[in-house]
Length: 165
Image 1 (cartoon, rainbow, N blue to C red):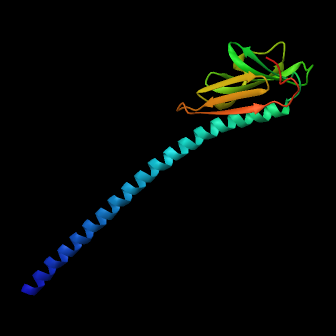
Image 2 (image 1 turned 180 degrees about the vertical axis):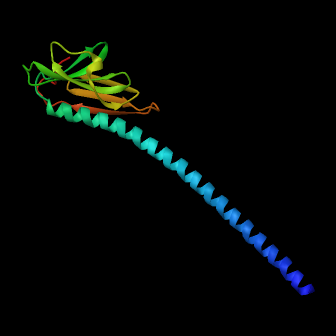
Image 3 (image 1 turned 180 degrees about the horizontal axis):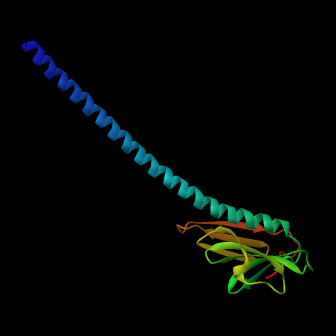
């Protein structure tokens, strides 16, 4: 009978050791999943912010290339916000206004001489800042994401006079 009690004691120690080993493994798995989820969340956030700035710059570049004719590209203001105005032809009465308003890059297509309000524009992407400058034949656009990191794009206009100001 002495042997039977000793075996039960050894068996209890084995079970406790296996249970402790399982708890260490489960705890490690939970830690690894937590760290992985945090890394994934940061990566997705950075990708979204990069996406917004890149989309805004690509959108402006494509719109400018479509409207790159003499006298079709100008910079104006729309309710105090600088706006890139892309006219439908040199004598076009309609134009596309691209501007930054209320935390987003917006587009507004309307009569050139009677623009609607800045709030009427369609939201393209959300940004924390957007600037535009036209100097001679060069159009420079700068977009900033929510973290304040900015990207810029400089386009060389191919039209004879490079647009107007």
